[in-house]
Image 1 (spheres, rainbow, N blue to C red):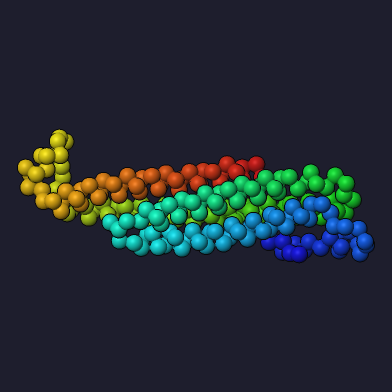
Image 2: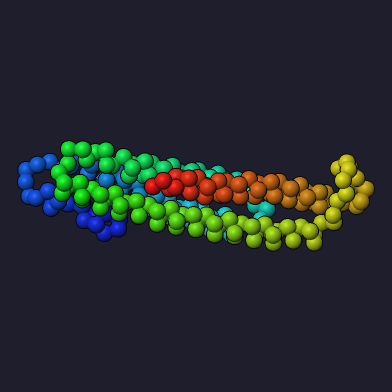
Length: 204
């Protein structure tokens, strides 16, 4: 069995070749490593969703993609949270361990904590990069609308007709408003996911 950072976890090698069963904490390590693998896979899926979403034409309906991004981001954050709690709980499984097993467990916990920290840093960087690309795309889209549609004065929507707005321009204004609101919501979610990870790993 190999840990993510390369530390070998072989219970028989750690406690000598005996008939004793492996330490209780080995199962916990297996579960953490499984979840680490899931995090990596989910991060790949999220990166693919990000690229697909950012390459979609601005006014296309992308609500399904945005929902998938939101769900996948939440799943990754929850997996990080579960791994963090599981790593912190590992020492409690070593009460009956020998001194040698205790040292091994200490190395295992340190290795897992480091691997999770590196993975969470990678995830935060990916989220920050996506946020930057979102904002750049928003600025380009806003520039398009600013140059394509005349500025509106405050007042009743009916005044738009009196100023010579066509039906197509009215639709464009409405779509732009909805798009901006949706982007703002999505940006808030990205910022929140980064904040959540910082909180999760503050004490690890």
